[in-house]
Image 1: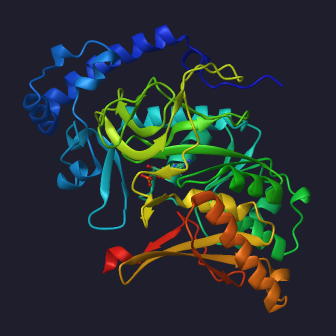
Image 2: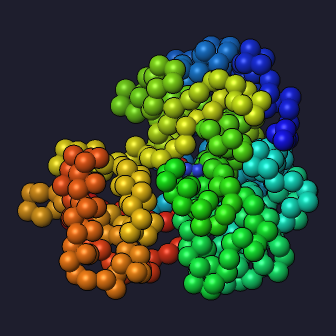
Amino acid sequence: MAHRIWNETMECMDRESMRKIQSIRLREIVEHVYHNTPFYRNKMQELGITPEDINSVDDLVKLPFTVKTDLRDNYPFGLFAVPSSEIVRVHASSGTTGKPTVVGYTRKDLTTWSEVMARTFTGAGVHSNDFIQIAYGYGLFTGGLGAHYGAEKVGASVIPISGGNTDKQLQLIQDFKTNAIAMTPSYALHLAEVMEERGIDPESLDLRVGIFGAEPWTESMRKEIEERLKIKAIDIYGLSEIIGPGVSFECEDQCGLHINEDHFIPEIVDPETLKPVAEGEEGELVFTTVTKEGLPLLRYRTKDLTSLNYEKCSCGRTLVRMKKCTGRSDDMLIIRGVNVFPSQVESVLLEMSETEPHYLLIVERVGTMDTLTVMVEVQNEFFSDEISKLEALQKKIKQNIQNLLGLSVNVKLVEPKTIERTAGKSKRVIDKRVLQ
Ligand code: DLL
């Protein structure tokens, strides 16, 4: 079947034309922030540049970077580039410490957001005949409302259920014959788990596709979700600062996330030197928003690690693709000198049939030694089994992780349902070292 594309002009444009559009828009946005955001004017003056120095995307590298603390330091509205009379919505992301990061949208920004989300849902194969259940949180979090307006724009029938209340989710999936669900991947796994408990056969449902994001998830987790829910699991990426969900999206071919680069220009830089990496290499993803009015950001450092692929996709889109993002530079644990990403442990655990995809990594300092304990739920049938089998399993997990990471870890097997489930973003790591 031919792929549906929401905005063929923008999504399938030749690269040369895309660069031209990006360059024009970049010049406009730099002009806008220079005159309307004292923060950026000061930064540009410090670097000795003016808007006249920025002519094309090649000049991006001359511009200053922006980081999350810049938003926090100018809390709540200091980086807004329009008067509050033009702001029609605010959202905020909570973060782990301190003040939330506040973002603001003009009416045009909301239209842009719906547009990129309409591209996203169309890319996932959602269309106007579908019922879609939005189980991202509605409220200050961008997930719920962002998905909501995009799904309405494609004409789907939106069920704005928000996160949580899993039994209600299941009831509506059955009664409304829901075709698509949008939620975090960890919540999708929880939904699968509750479905199994209630004896609901996924084949008896009309569910066809899930649009999952807001947290890192591995290919193994995708496989697990697809098998247990009998759906296609599509990745969606975004962050509040750039617009919310819809910065990039997977198509049904599931081979990288198409970045809506007519609105958000990506760069990949080395997180240490901040210099651009060679094309195709992995590094930190940086975005410059080129159409946003309320909160335009120059070279915003996402901390997310990925690489870019400029080849045309089999779906026909020419939008640059980013590799599925499974780690953040600030997610990386350094344990006894070894770099460890939670996603690496996740892929080991998910490849083993004896364990459940629910785990927690606990890092502690014992004396001067850092230790990593992997707490993982064991499948029901295994847990009731003999101790010797559990010990053998523990050893096997330990060995598999050691083979991958070259690091010896402690493994703690726990009963199913011991590790907390959440309808929002899951917490995979407890680093007790930072608390000392
Ligand atoms: O999580 C926006 C969103 C909502 C995206 C719903 C997708 C679906 P924030 O709360 O600002 O915004 O968190 C942004 O979450 O920098 C990534 O580290 C992580 N993240 C988001 N989507 C993905 C994904 C929303 N698909 C931060 N894969 C980002 C990996 C993701 N990480």
